[in-house]
Structures are given as C-alpha cells and as structure tokens.
Amino acid sequence: MVPFGAGRRICPAWNMGTLHVSLMLARMAHAFKWLPVPDAPPDPTESFVFTVVMKNSLKAVILPRSSPSCSI
Image 1: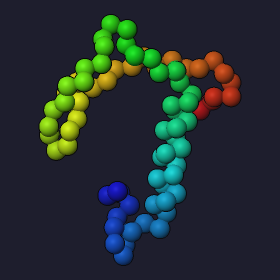
Image 2 (image 1 turned 120 degrees about the vertical axis):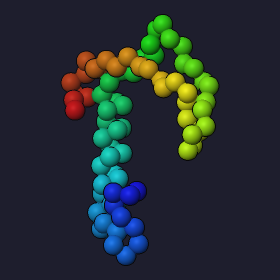
Image 3 (image 1 turned 135 degrees about the horizontal axis):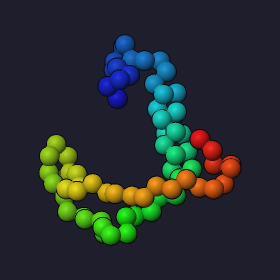
C-alpha cells in the first residue's frame, strides 16, 4: 500500500481509502453483466515475471444490467 505510506507517517485514512476502493469494485462487478468472449476460450498458461501472472490476459464482454437499482 505504497500510496498510504508506512510506519509512523502512515495516512490516518488508509482504512477508509481501501474500503472505498473495495466497495467501488464490488459495485462495478454487480452493475455489469460479465461474459466471456465467445470466440476465445481462456488460456490458463502462466509466465513468471515478478510474480506468477497469466501469459495472455482474460478478455470479457461487459454489458450494463437493465435493472435501475444497479446504477453507478
């Protein structure tokens, strides 16, 4: 969590900041319909850089939900 600092000089609002980011991501995941790309199945191969990551990133079709209660 580099943006919030560390040690004695840590940001006092880091709890609130990380909570808001989590809530924003959850709301985006709920407000849209996430579908896989029909022509491209997911490729599970990995590559080793600093950490283990997917060799080819996942692709998705993102459609807004029609429910008005899911507004962003």
